Amino acid sequence: MHKKLIVYSYFLFSIFCFANSQNLVIEVKGAQTHKAILYSLKGENNEKIDSIFSGNNNYFTYTFKKNLFHTGFYRAVFNQNIHIDFIYDGENIYISTNSDDILDSLHVINSLSNQLYYSFTKLNRSFKTKTDLLQLLLAKYPKDDNYYEKTKAELHHVQENYLNFINVISQKIPGSFIARYIKSYQLPIVNAALPPNQQLEFLKSHSLDNVNFKDGELIFSDLFTVKTIEYLTYYRNPQMPKGILENEFKSAIDTILNKAKVNYKVYKQIVEYLIDGFRKFGFENDLKYIIDNYVIKDDLCLDNKTEKSIQLMINQDKILHIDAIVPDISMQDPSGKIVNLDKIESKKILIIFYASWCPHCMALIPKLKEYLSTLHNHGLKVLAISLDTKRSDWINFINRNNLKWINISDLNGWDSKTALDYYIYATPTMFLIDSNKKIIAKPKNIGDLKNFL
Image 1 (cartoon, rainbow, N blue to C red):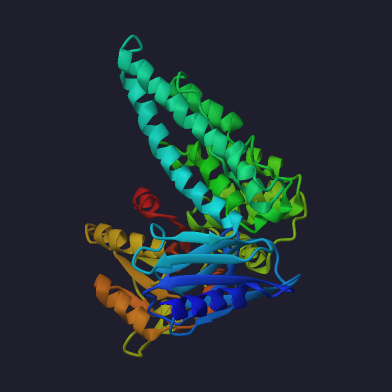
Image 2: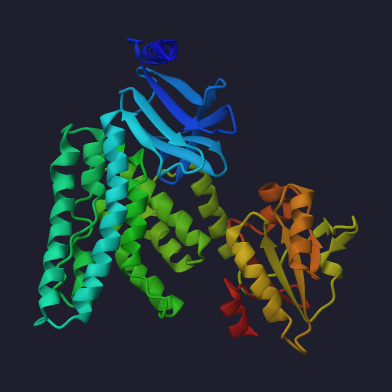
């Protein structure tokens, strides 16, 4: 036992004693792999940095050389279901956990920043759960009931404890990355005495008050993307028609982006995040609003992927407009037979671009199939074009969904000639054409298709 302790102590000493570097040790008890991938986090994007290896002892170690790594969040990914996020800020890090229950068994042994981070994430979840429940109780109980005052006092106690962590405990290292992150990330405190509509107005007006948009270093975290989506939820109403909801979102967009303009890096990150989100969910009016009023007006230099998506969207809108004749399509079906769009005879053809890995496609296609099966005398055929790159993924998706459509693909993904001809920038994308191959509708969802048909 004494010998093991000496070996263990030497192991830790050898890890943490280098003068010109900072070191990471992650102990994953019961790990089924000896390799992990290290990523740098930046909003919603992950950049692969390096690989981390362990021997047969479940200790994954890595050395951060001074001046080569920026301060911010990093992620160690052990497999598809197991990853650990941590803050690198020049301090040695030692985290221990169990592969069966990563978060609940996680213990930060070294690095005050990471101790504060994991304490904060736990507190944040607890705070939201408790305050939501207590506010619900206050809304239900009569104000003259004794239990009302007890509940009100408990809510006040929960809020005070939360603010004490934000303003006192988390500021043990004033000006540090974690101190600034927590200050900006904190949830807003809402007066429970306000009626629900006034609480919502308060959140719209004040929920971003604590976010430091000037702090460009915080782009190396999830702060600005989380706060952006959090703020948009205050304007979201599932009961609203899409057009009205898009107008509501424009108010949120203006508030967020005008605040973010104080720092170019923060501004750029939020613009790219909003563009990607509205593009994925088919809110084209909001997408165009951002492009016209922010990207073009402020001459923003976006990343290549976002710039390309925007240009494809503009070209698709300009060239493949209603009444335009679509380009011909020539691709193989699963049996290897060449299918040409020009040779498909039908009163109407629904062209749909999709991919088996696209979550929105997975949700749309079964519903689309069910809806189309109810149609009669519409003379409509479906040409389903997969942007997959693996034949097995494509065929499995067809079989799993029992798609009896005209299924074709060249397995070139986004680089497919047809995808380029149709300026595809998102999946799913649909075009409804007539017998002359002229576009008669560009439905964004089943609702749009139903309305047209």
